[in-house]
Image (cartoon, rainbow, N blue to C red; front, side, top):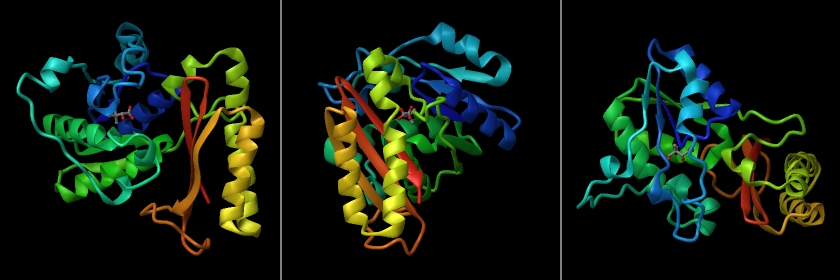
Length: 251
Ligand code: PAF
């Protein structure tokens, strides 16, 4: 299974190709999940392109499950799944509602489809760890597989939200991955906290309006790390105009 919110791009297509390596039959879900958006966020504006999505999937998906909100959350719906552990901090500091919405809908989708394997993009690295935790803790019979981030020619991580960017903003957005590479280089040769602080400053200089975080964390738990002794992950979130971008890289 490949759970998505639609507005499919090449990154999603690569997730479907990854799923096909593990399975004879692939289900793609397309559902813009209201419970993972706060009231002030972009739920209404989120692109809904079901016909184009179906055309893009062609016969790469055996089943497309595109429920409406009433099917997923009928009147009287009252259950929320919350995950602690890797859901703590980072995205949660800025989008406190987010992982409860994701965990709830992913639990419902995985229970409904009961797939052997579900593929999630590393682009949403914290989400990937949260979903792994969810599947482990609820003993869901599904292996959660992470697939690498696909990038545009200038290194911008592919995301449905890139469509919001005006041309000038798109040029700024392309700097995010370059700043992250610089942060990794400084972290390897000096203080992790100084590397993070330099990354935040570089993003403001590049034209981002607000930097939510640039953080080096343990790659498996997202715990704080003082040194690069175990596999680590650099994660960042920053806003340009109304668009919020996230990215991450392994260290
Ligand atoms: O990554 C996404 O597109 C969504 O968060 C997901 C996993 C489909 C849940 O709505």
